[in-house]
Image 1 (cartoon, rainbow, N blue to C red):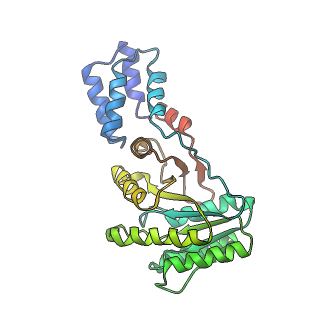
Image 2: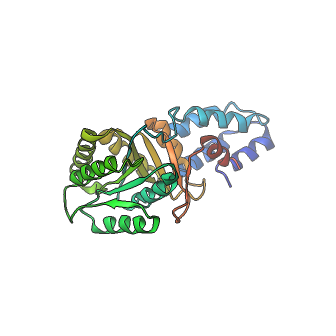
Image 3: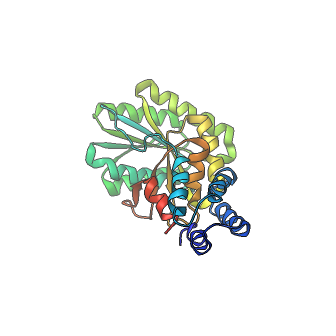
Length: 277
């Protein structure tokens, strides 16, 4: 059941919401990870709605709070370089593989295993590359991530690849070192080719921690879009709205399952509608 369904049913029964209904609704919004600011904006709107217009009115206020920026991953005329960032465990490496699979019909795809300090991440990406028949550029253990990215761009340009997806480190407990490293990777990459996108992977189940992660990464590497993983329902999916409302960063893709095909473009209208059904 969508987080708005119970509230709407009460309005339809009584015509206008009472104080107790609004307080209950506010608690439901907070529990769904919409955050305090957006939840209060919705409550203010909810106080004015009538039964016949409640759903449409509340949908309008939600949509008005979302980012107006493009949600498409637009390829460059030559090589399209996409950095994937996020904390370890968010589904970052798997999201790289999903994007590679999604876009390989549009041209040659190359992957860069730049999470060099976590051997498991390199091995995981190499395994995905073997399954998908996609080249993975990697370095020796503990090698400089920026050097791996530099090599990957040079090889991608030489082979006239269409897409380069870069998997990066996500050790947030070493926040300053990590952010400096990601900034260096981006600068080194752009000496050879522009980085068209920096996509941040957020685990939807982390709630408001996801918003804090988005703020940290956005300060370091100019995040252009978000991949929301583990969004298997709308019950806790309010974090999608909270991030867009707070940071004006568009969610571009959502992970919907474990297989490599389980990634789709984020449809804000469809998502908002799901909160009511």
